[in-house]
Image (cartoon, rainbow, N blue to C red; front, side, top):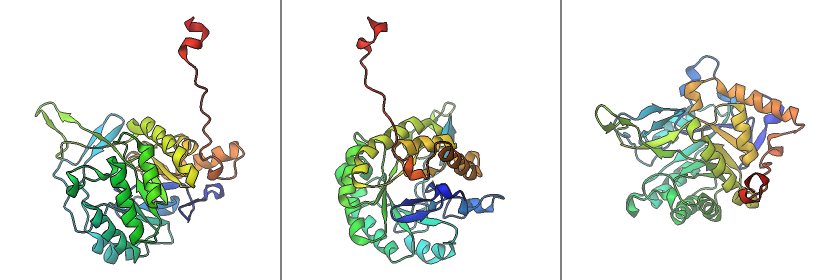
Length: 321
């Protein structure tokens, strides 16, 4: 691993700024069966979304390809927190990389209980997925309401000493306000962004292709939106030294570098693995080479170095006179 890629995130020492995103690599084992793939190529892995009780997930179809991306609505299929803690986590090789559990709940209380259970485990950190429907509050997604986001993070903070990373939804009016409320509640890091909501239609049946009717859009199609959201959240998070996992359509080293410049301390890779399972070493090499070429000692030297253009009104330019 390139020495200049070592970075810190929420108090964790990472060998690479790359974080494999929840839902894309199962519980850390899915891609290890591919020749040439190694968990040692990444700084951390976010394990599959886990709920208190087992879930079967949504009816099929659950995944469909779209131009420059994909839509998925898996429905949090998982064996439940106790199975993950007692049967899956002991199989993880902690010498390979860091492991982060992704937790979801249908009530504030459920989030708190899951956080409490993982607090007694040897997981490195907890990622809070606040983009799930809030069953007790009329079906509103927690992550689309800053005050509900606060309540979820707050109860998790009270139930664990593990580093908390809150995954922010782009499907809201003011993501910066949501970030602020999550920081107020005690989050140690932020993941920006979760998927955008989307739909794909079968014109022959005139029905949505996804069994759940709608799902999360990921891939290169959402990269410009994700970059802007990272920049907006960074304006808040930098005041508190809260690091960001920048994610959304990262396919190349240049994509990753853009997110770091916008304010991300680490970068999340997900949909890119479906295109190229061996993309991570290429991204590592590209970031390392960029740092060398620009005389930067580490990834942290590049974080948030975006220089905005001066705001100029079109009416003030000579071409419009």
